Structure formats: C-alpha cells, structure tokens
View 1 (cartoon, protein in one colour):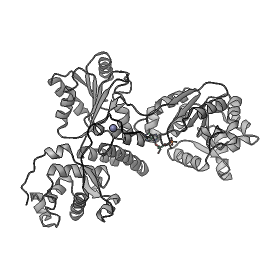
View 2 (tube, protein in one colour):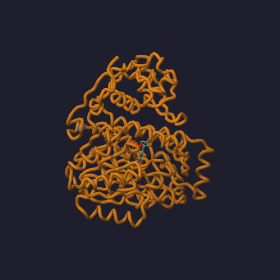
View 3 (cartoon, helix red, strand yellow):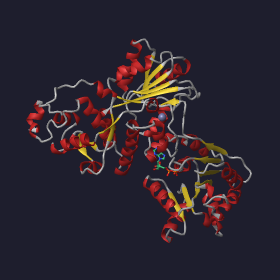
View 4 (cartoon, helix red, strand yellow):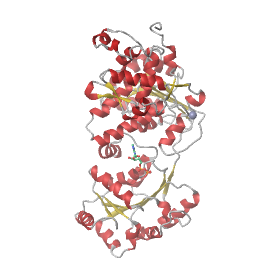
Length: 515
Ligand code: ADP
Ligand code: ZN
C-alpha cells in the first residue's frame, strides 16, 4: 500500500534509502525520531503515513515559506492539506477551518508560535488530530543555532492530545538527539532511525552495453554457485536471459509481473530456499524477498531512476558480506527511458522531475570519479572515495572532448535536428550511405569532420552527451536528437567537456581508412 501511494500521489517509483522503514513505523503509530540528511526526503516520511491513518496529522514546522511550498505541492497532488500561520490570509484560514470542521483535512501545518495562542488546543482536539509530526526537531535544542522557544510546548501538546509523535531532523549529534528525546517525547523512548545511506560492502560498477547477453553471462560465470538477480527492462528479456544462463550451465529462473500469482510465489520460494540460483527478473521481483545472502545484482538494462538503482542494488549483501553489482547501459537504454517518461500520462512538471532523476542516474553511470561519492551526494551524504567501486579500482581515462562534442552538436543542427545517433555518426565519420546521400548530407560542412574517431567512439560520445543532457531524443520526431539549452555554452565555446574513454569504444574496429 505505501508503494501504491508513493506512485499514485507522488509519482515516485521507489523509496529513497531509509524512507520505507520510517513510513511504516509512523503509519503504525509509533513514536519516532528520524535523522536524515538534508535533501534525503524527510517530508514524505510524515506526509505518506498521514494518508494511511484516520484523522488529521498535525505538522509543526518553523518556516512559513516551507509550509507554503509543502501545502501547495500536496494540494497539487490532490491531498487535503492546509496551514494556519500568521502568513496566511483570513480567507485561507477560513478554508482550513471549514475543512477541519467537515473532517476532510489530512495534514494541518502550523507554526510553533500558534501553540501559544489560547484556543489552539481545543481546536486541535475538535479537529481529531491523530498524530503529530515535527519538522526540524533540533529547533527544540537550546544549544543549537535554531532554538525556537515555542518548540518547548510540543511535549506538552503531545501529552494533552495523547497521540504518537514523529520528529525529524538532519542534525545527528548525540547531544541534540538526547535533548530532542527528552523535550519532545516526555520520557517515552521513541524508535530512532539514524542510518547512513551507505552500504559499504556492495561493490559498485557500470559498463557500457556491448552485447549484454555475453556481458551478463560472463559476470554470472565468474560468480558461479552464488545467488544473484539480473534485472531486465522487459518480460521477454527475463526469459531469454534465464534460458541463456541455463544453457551455459548456470541454474536460472525468470520472474515478471505477467506470470500467474502461483508461478511467482513458486519462483520466490525457490530463490529463498535454494543456494546459487539466479533470477532474471523485472522490477516486480524483490519487494517481498528477504534473502540476506544475495551475492550479486546485475542490471541488463538501465534502471529508470537513481532511486530505483539504489533500491535494486540494495537487495544484495544484506548480511554485510561482500556483494557485487554491475549495471549495463547504452544509448538505447537512455532513449527508452526518456520516451517512457515523455509518453507517460504525468503532467509536465512531474515529467521534468522524472527526467531529472534519470539524469542523476546517467550522471552516476558516466561519472569520472568514485561512484559512491556521486551516489551518496545525491542523497545528501558526503564521503571520501570508497575504495570499493570500479573507478576506485581503476580510475577511468578522461579526454578533452569539447571539440568532438561541438562537432556532434553541429552535425545535429545542420541536419535540422531530424535524425538519430546512427545517421549523425554517419555524417561525422563521412559515411556516404544511401540515406546520407539522399538528404544531401554528404554536402554539409560537417560531413567527415569526425573521421579521427571510430563509430564506436562516437557512440560513446553521444551516449555521454545524452547522459549530460546536452541533447535529447524528441518523441515528436521519432526520437531524433535535438540539442538542449545546456548545449549552448558548449557551442559558444564557453564551457569545455571532458568525457570518459569507453573501454568498449577502444576495442571497436575503425571501419574506414582516414581521409
Ligand atoms: P528534506 O526535507 O529531507 O531536506 P525533502 O522532503 O524536501 O527533503 O525531499 C527532497 C527532495 O527529494 C524533494 O524534491 C522530493 O520530491 C524528493 N524525493 C523525496 N522522496 C523521494 C523518492 N522516494 N523518490 C524520488 N524523489 C524523492
Ligand atoms: Zn569508489
């Protein structure tokens, strides 16, 4: 259920690290203190449970602007939320009062100052407040920089209402934590969530797609006898990969949402019980799986967001012993994921957020440095280079690709932004194919200006350009590549671009002699 709400109301495909456990505890009515880094996604941890519980959840938050943003976003998603603060107009407050009276409100935001006003407690009692959430809970600490005296009234309020309280903060030091517990929970002991997001035993690696079946078979063969999951983008792929693994002597089964419930249960059971079984699965697999010794997770296709990636690799190595991951990605994956977003039913702002989450994953896939640093930074945590990812094992070779990127952008522009990567590469490498000749593209000034790179190298350049959102496939032009505003500074010579040399591109044969 929580995952249904996550998808339907927020449009997110996976929980961020730590969120699900907190959501479940808050929804179950426990007292909770959750410490999460800024940007980690705290607000969802009290908003989503509010929709799962009867009555109103009271949210105490110190900043009126923040409340306005959150209430606005919730309302836009169809959630009954409102705020009572000095910054809201009388008309806005009247609307909230009337929603409180008819029992339709789910989330009521309030500034702490309001708790001091007479009449607030009876109002909250009448409104049927069934839980309290406290944002920026460190404001209760007299030692902190953000001390707000009115936060001291929250403990009293909790006692008076007799409801569970969930407190959230990004401040993790033990002293502040102790003070929050003493002052907000009134002697009760809350369940404390303080996780770093790091799973240091999981080795992180990405590889450009270069015959994914062989790449996955090699990866699995090097880990024969270990339990692993191969995530695939399509049902058909789960079946062909499972068959290929079996044919190579590696016991494997397939799993996807199109299978009968009975067959799915049986597959889950086998995977739990048997040692060394591989499951080739769609993302439908994993939710109910509680197997601590999954030794590896491979992605035969790029996941849809950085959150999905984290959740899926996180199924490996729950026992804390070393576990390995490999994520394959190529130009086609990027095109597929972009078009899935563009062709979906979501509104424009949600679509652009989805592109952003995909960009974050692509940034990780083509990152020049430590993978874990990039991944954890996205979730708000800083860390030193990890020593347990492919780039820490072997730093990638970088090259100044500014000129190459400009040539590619110019080939796209000169051909009217009406063509895909293959055709653009034909222009760049001076391949006079029928299509190139028919369009007169062998007459363009960019024809053949990229002969210094092989077609394989150009694939890598364009994939990384897609990853950095310098160009995008346009769904209204059958996926033709169009340049984005981010490409303009590169075209104008204001920014340079350094790219990774693909291991795969170096192996690719050079198709033509240089002119
Ligand atoms: P915090 O209060 O912890 O600083 P927020 O609650 O404002 O963080 O969330 C930070 C951002 O993360 C927001 O843009 C939010 O929409 C996004 N976010 C939260 N949870 C998820 C999720 N499960 N998947 C994708 N994005 C998420
Ligand atoms: Zn690393």
